[in-house]
Image (cartoon, rainbow, N blue to C red; front, side, top):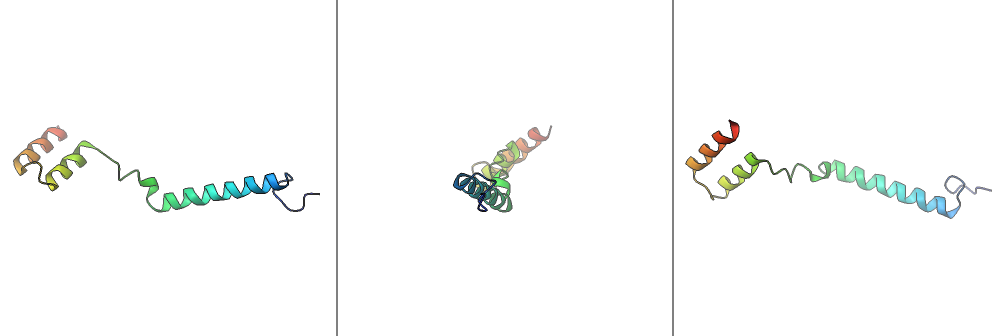
Length: 72
């Protein structure tokens, strides 16, 4: 008899179903919180340039010159 656990695999089926549900919940939470945070680690040249300017590592003239170079 199946006894209502999994797809007829007994306790093994119960464990597999439990792990599958946990995996789906984990990925849904990760997706809802920001798509796996892929946009945070987006190190495009313009983003790096903006961050360097914001931290004061480069002057406004250097920033504008580099930005023009990146757009060309």
